[in-house]
Length: 304
Image (cartoon, rainbow, N blue to C red; front, side, top):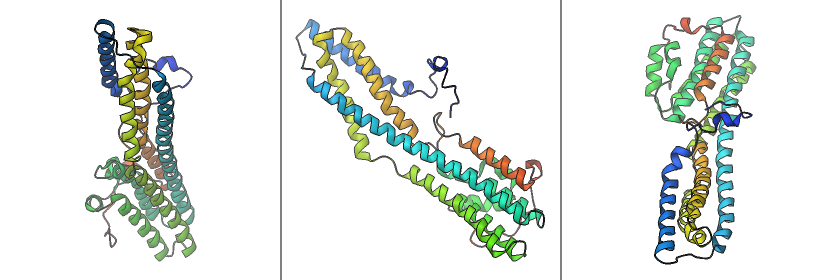
C-alpha cells in the first residue's frame, strides 16, 4: 500500500506507481490512433460522421456501470481491511486473556501460545497469496513443526489447531478452568472466521458477465466516439477521445486494482506490516523476544 498525504495532492500528480496510467496507456493510445484515422478519413476522403445523440445517452449508462464497478470493488477492499483488523484485535485479545488466566502460573505455555498466535497472520497472508510457508516467523518456531505445517493442506488452520491444543493443554494441567478454555477458544474461532471471510473475497470475483459486458461497452463506445464528434470538432476529436478514453478506462482499471486486496500490488493492503504489528504486540504480551524464540520441538498433536 502507498502511504500519502491526501492534503498535498500536487505532490503525487505525476506519480506512476500505484496509478492506473501504466495499465490503460496502451488502450488509450490505441483509441487516439483510431480517432486520428477517423478524422483523417472524414476530412480528406469522405464524411463519415454520425449523430451524437446515442453517445450522449450511452455515456450516462456507462457512468452508472462504472460507479457500480468501483463501489463493488471498494466494498471488497474495505471488507478485507475490516477482516484483517479483526485478526489484529482477536490476536491481541487472545494473548491478553491468556496472560491474565495463566501467564504467572505457566509462562512457558504462554510464550508458546504467543509464538503460534504470531504465526497465524503470516500463515493466513501466505494462504491468501498462494505462497507456501509461514514467512519470517518460521525462525521463531520449532523446525520440525514448521516442516509438518508446510506439508499440511491448510497451514493457517494447522496453526489454529496448534493454538487450540496449547489452550487444551493448559486446561489439562489445571492452569485454567473450562470456562477460561472456552473463552480462549472463542478468540481462536474468531481468527479462523476472519480468515474465512478473506478467502470468500479472494475466491469470489465480480460476476463474469458484468465485467465482460462493461468492457465490451467501453470498447464499443470509445471506438465509435470519433464518428460522433468529428463533424463538430474536426481534429480536436483526437484530444476529446484521449480525455474520454483515459477517464473511462482509468475508472474501470481502478476497480480491477482494488477488488483483490490481498496481493502484492501497490494498492493492496499492507499485510506484511499488519502481520509484523501483530507479532510485536503478541510477543510483548507473551514476554517473547524473537532472538530467543526457538524452543525444542515438542510432539505434534494429532491431526496436525
